[in-house]
Length: 333
Image (cartoon, rainbow, N blue to C red):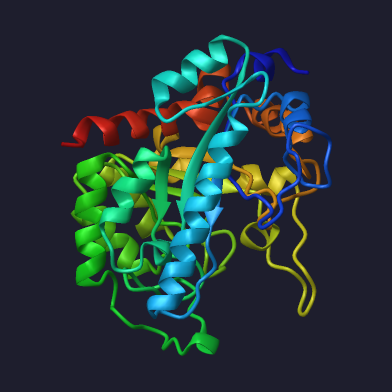
């Protein structure tokens, strides 16, 4: 393994897990991320997400979504009890875990739909160790418009015109309790409004640059500028369709070089202090050269080849995200 990579605190900020019936993650599995692959790839820490698909916005749908998210958070917390691992609810715990040679396990919730209309769930998730909440997934919810509406659920192209009043209240509560606001999957007007309203920096944990690939899940230069203005960070992710348009009717294919092209664009636009890296493994991420966690060092190799030094690589892999996390906690009541 390259010595720069081996010396870097490599944090993957968005990893999906199979649900229900997740495999035993401490053994080799068919998943793109498990503990042996993390160790082989020099991944010191990972944010595992309690992902909830968008469903019907009624009492039953919300109750099922809440139950799923909280069961997944409990499962993720249990992953941190494995030998050589620790569950880390804060950045100091993460750094201490890595310094001790152990793997740091973190948790987050993906899709504010799991909150229903109950703002108290946000505090409950923070107490369960959640680091961030992704406001939407595919499909509008009661908080915000999604970048990809779901007509099958009755979505119009635009519902709230950005954030709903409940969404604005949720942002204020997230600021109050120190839960990071993740604007991945969020429609541009809602993302810009979140960046404007939040009194702490925002994050976009898994996206890419629309200037290089015009996918609805990518962010344009105006959005990149808004993240910088908030003090936040944009994490470029390894989803092929976000990195390179595919042939008509064919799946997109992308490489580590394509991923770093997007990192280059974001760094050139908003500066090294506001850009990071994530895989979205087991949720659609995987590119040639970085097809699972065991191949993570290939990204560092490509960054080195482009002229990034060890300090810059450390910022991209974890330093910027940790700075934002600390700022969010410092701004909390």
